[in-house]
Amino acid sequence: MRKAKLKSVGEIPGSIVYTWDKMTAESIVQMIEYNEKEYTETAISDFHQCIEKHKGNVKWIDFIGVDQTNDLSEIGALFNIHALTLEDIANIKQRPKYEDMEDYLFLTLKMFCYIHEEKRLKEEQISFVLGKNYVISFQENEDSDDFENIKDRIRKGKGRIRKMNADYLMYSIVDTIIDNYFVVLEHIEDEVEELQDELMKDPNPKTLHKIQNLKQNLIILRKSIWPVREILGALERTESDLIDDRLQAYLRDAYDHTVQIIDTIETFRDIIAGSLDIYLSSLSNKMNQVMKVLTVISTIFIPLTFIVGVYGMNFKYMPELTMKRTYPALWIIMISIAGWMLRFFRKKKWM
Image 1 (spheres, rainbow, N blue to C red):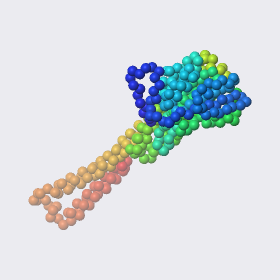
Image 2: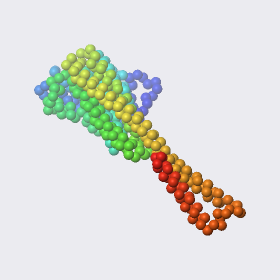
Image 3: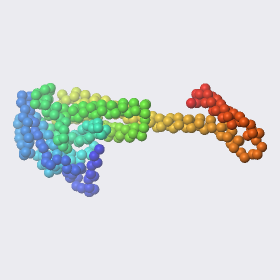
Image 4: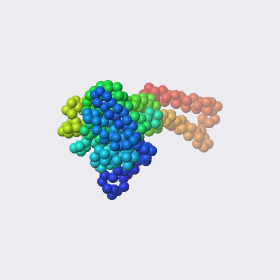
């Protein structure tokens, strides 16, 4: 995961400081304007185009490049977005949150994708401003357009999106982010199943790294998704005129999905915690098996060592030393003792 820079202590509240290295050479702004019958899609070069009024139309202004703080300030001034809101947009380590600023609603969420080859999560912060007949979305970069499916529905007039207000557009974006969490959890579920198989068959030091990596990914997900439940609950209860009563059913559905995701994450966390116990138990069992074998070998050699020690003493008068068959007889006795002990251990199921 990326590590953001810390803001300097003592900065003026509302200072717009991007908390990571620059990611875009310039900001990219796309505006989609639509109503039930028609839509237009425009690449914005002059931000003043965004505030041109067309009665009855819903505007979606997709702003990519929050590292371009000057452009962020400019679009914020055009739509009267509070400086503290702009500060939160530029702070990519901002905790997911919801604020009712009377003239607009502000939300910030985390979007994740799972990089299977590297077994890690890629994180991007997505922020939204919902105003009267407009939604402004703020993204970090254009590596992947996570909302292309929504834009396609607008272009083709699919579903309700062209018949509803701007609040439904905001809900559609939030719902897409929540659906993406399910995709990420499916990848993690595959990793958890693979880990369980490995623990049962042949746990090794790499298994511990996998456990730790999964545990870290789940902590990151939990930290980012738990606040989403609070956000949706607050949106359900809000008395803002910007949220239509017709949206309540959709918000409740999104809330239920979030609860389901949180339950899944908690289940995976329990499994991973149990996996660590299984791994440690497996190591302990392996060590016990090794110690058991070594103990059996040592026990077998104790009487043999005694016999060899007795006949290794330098006494002058030892009658057995003058007998011709003493040496082979001694070998027969020692082999018999070892064989009898092995049979005894097996009968007792000690080996």
